[in-house]
Image 1: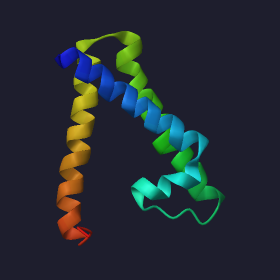
Image 2 (image 1 turned 180 degrees about the vertical axis):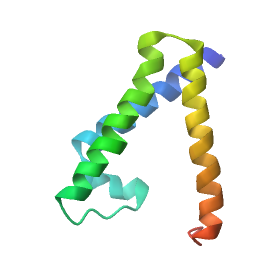
Image 3 (image 1 turned 90 degrees about the vertical axis):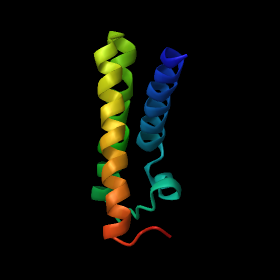
Image 4 (image 1 turned 60 degrees about the vertical axis):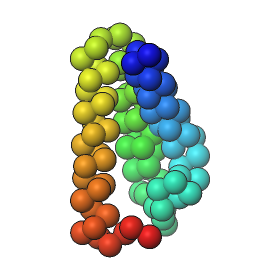
Length: 93
């Protein structure tokens, strides 16, 4: 069961990356980011697109438990920083 959840997490990460790469202006709906110009669009394509594709694809390509662990640690770090940031930045709404 854990292996299935790991694969789903990796695939969801890749899917998020592909969506961000192909439709960067639509990420506003799930990120709240405003992209006023080309530089912002490039950042979304590269970070939310390319980085997420690589982050999710690596465990699937290499099939290593350590790669899946790395993906989990990355999400744990994002979650921890987001949790603190929601209070510091008063963005709970």
